[in-house]
Amino acid sequence: MRIVVTGGAGYIGSHTCVELLNGGHEVIIVDNLVNSHREVIERIAQITGERPLFYEADATSDLAVDLIFSTHQPEGVIHFAGLKAVGESVQVPLAYYRNNLLSTMVVLDNCLKHGVDRFVFSSSATVYGENQVPFVETMELGHRTNPYGETKAICERMLTDVAEVNPQLAVTLLRYFNPVGAHESGLIGEAPQGVPNNLMPYLTQVAKGVLGELQVFGNDYPTPDGTGVRDYIHVVDLAEGHVLALERAEPGVSIYNLGTGKGTSVLELVEAFEKANNLKIPYTITARRAGDIAECYADVRKAREQLGWTAKRDLTEMARDAWRFEQQTGKNNS
Ligand code: NAD
Ligand code: UD1
Image (tube, rainbow, N blue to C red; front, side):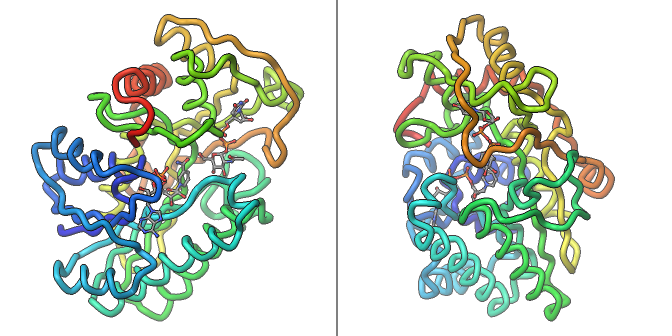
């Protein structure tokens, strides 16, 4: 299939482009590089031996998206483009609502206009709020958590409303748990700007000596060791899930959790990282981070039963690949 990938130069998007190209699909990346770098396109070509088409363009621009769709007549879209920093979304909510909602509206509108029937959307486990774990797709969405999370919930509802009156449209909402790791080549991975907010990129920077020590945000949660529990998933498993979701898309709305189904605490992740990479991570326990929940992990039965997808890579591979990318490519390259 010919697939437009918005945000395809980003962390999850670039890994998905690799898997799409490996699967024989044609890839057209639309990215304004607000949180990524042009070299990523070269690296995708280096890994796969296939060069994706690339447009440096804003997915909120109707003019740009219309032109790209008219030129290439895609058969499907994966819409990754969006801003994703939770803290920043509290500081500049309008920028988040504008970018995340408008880009989704513009891309969806052009799907309808150009007869593109497959729309895969990057959602997040954050939409479950403080529901009881494991999170199941049939649960009501949770309470709003922050403007970033709210943009995901609104887009999910918007896509659902539009699918209802466009029966040919296959909308797939993929709710990611905690994507970590990198491609095994070490050529693409996650390189956040500034001090990382998320645990794995923070760990790799402590390992590298860029940051002094890890602060563990609270050890008084009702979890086995008191630290927060999350469902870490290797980004290549996640990318493979996108290819299957796209290939198996059926008219209507389909929602899938993409996680491993296994909860891992902060201290367990630190230990797995130390073992996998044979190094020590200094850490201290500090106060809880505002807005954090105790536990977040997926019920993964639906993706297994309906997509035939399960996450295959374990914590050791996640830790090893994240560290390899940090050493090999590191900062300034997403
Ligand atoms: P990322 O920032 O690495 O990738 C997003 C890409 O979109 C970047 O390359 C950025 O330049 C581009 N972009 C942003 N706004 C754009 C616009 N208006 N037009 C064109 N390009 C634009 O982030 P990621 O981690 O790869 O996340 C991809 C998607 O998955 C996002 O929608 C994010 O909210 C969602 N998501 C991510 C996580 C996670 O933990 N990484 C979890 C759940 C959901
Ligand atoms: C973050 C986002 C969430 C998003 C999710 C998916 C925030 C507040 N939330 O949440 O919206 O859906 O990623 O990727 O950013 N931790 C530490 N020390 C650190 C960093 C993290 O102890 O320096 C702990 C956290 O308290 C948490 C765990 O590590 O228990 C994972 O944190 P993080 O990687 O930020 O992911 P989420 O909290 O799941």
